[in-house]
Length: 325
Image (cartoon, rainbow, N blue to C red; front, side, top):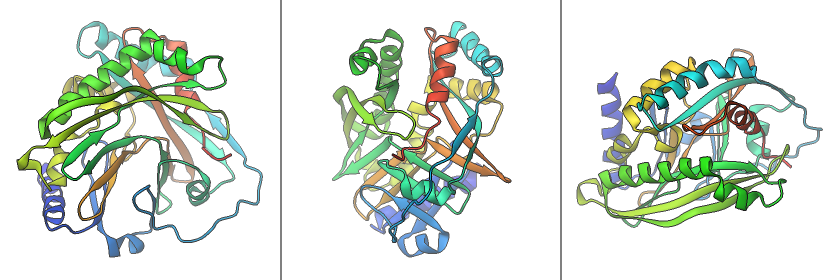
């Protein structure tokens, strides 16, 4: 398995060193790496809407009332994996674990309609297989500078003083500090002069069901000469993304695979657009996938030793939404 992927990452390096534009998609475990040069995107059936690149053609009108139902597992069922995570945290095997679930949903929208009508920083529709509308940047590379924007912590925006509560909540704060620390370390593997430029910045996310606030930070560094222009090598070093895994990475990955009991697939992987010079990439979250004739929404959140079962179960359910309004 590894050799094939290694080959793919090398191919990404070759293209980026030659300044050839391409789009890439990498699943959670880096087992599937797909590369599409500009002229191949059309044929692949991918629809992409990034701030730096879009291949969406037509104006779409939505002439129907949205129907949307979700069927989350019971709290009891959620608790099984949650307890495994907490036990590992108590044993000192991890101090932050991103625990995710898959929830069946029913909607009268097709995946393509969800793509066209949802509003998000990053949207991709992949041949009737999955769609996502992600607010979270993974890394950007601009003129030899690499930037990352870990997003951790969300709250219902209708709560009074929601943004202040989010910033001062001990659990959310601990989680955010941990991810910032983790990503600062990750970035240091490929960059020098790594700094946290912005800390605990609050973003507003509008959705059809409810409005949310999310907390993010900005970290940047200067690419080391040996990684300059090598997008594949950079990805190979940085993946899986720290914000959707936890810390420390290797042990936390083991815990996730045991606790979740389902295959994340492309969910929480990353995809990105290299324009021949600069890179913009995102974490594939807020993710809906077709499995046979059913749709599943994959969502979750970070668990620390301070996490309460009820709150985490609620957060997982809060994230099952479409940003259509």
